[in-house]
Image 1 (cartoon, one colour):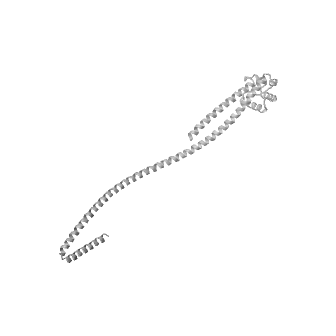
Image 2: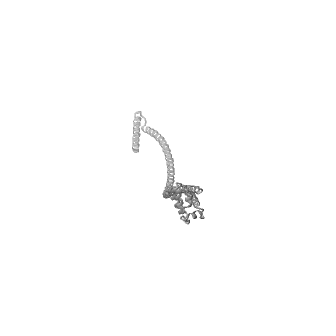
Image 3: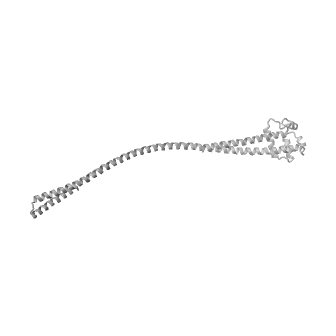
Length: 257
C-alpha cells in the first residue's frame, strides 16, 4: 500500500513537470527555468511535508515509548500481583486443609460425645425409674408403719384388742389380731411382717409374746418405730442420691453440648 502511494506521487510529479514544460513553451519562457522553479517549489513543499511527518513520527514514537513503559510497568505490577495472589491462594488452600482436618476431628469427637450423652441419658433414665420405684415403696412402707404404730399404741392403752395382743406369741399373731379387729388390712399386715423379718434378722420374731414385749427393743411398737426410722432414713438417702445423680448428669450434659 505504501509503495503504491509513492508510485502515485511520482506520477503526479512527472505530470506536473510535463504540464509546466508545456505551459513554459506556450508562454515562450525558458523550459529549464520553469522546471527548476517547479522543482524548487516541490522541494520546499516536500520538505515542509517531511517536517510535518517527522514531527508526527516523533510524537507517535514518544507516545509509543511512554505507552511501552506504562505497559511494562503494568505487566510488572500484574506479575507481582499474580505472585502475591498465588501465595495467598496457596496459604488459604493450606488453611482449608487444616480446617477440614480439624472439622473431621471435631466431628469424630462430637459423635463420641453424642454417643456418651445418649448412654448417660439411658443410665440416668434407668436410675430415675429405680428411684421412683424405691421412693414409692418406701413412702408406702412409711405410711403403713406409721398407721400400724398408731393403732398399736391406741390398742395397748386399753383398746378392744388389748387382751388378744397380750396373748399373742409372735409378731405374726400380734398383727393377725389387728387384722381380725379390722384395725389393719391383711395386705398391710403381710407387708409389716415381711419388713420386720427382713430388717431384723437377728431378732426372733417367733419368740413368745412376753419376749416380744419385754425384749431389748422395747416391744413391737419399738420394733415398728425402728423400722419407721430406717425407712425414713432410706427415703432421705434415696432422694439425696437422686439429687446428686441428677446434678452430675446435668453437668455432664452441659459439658458434652
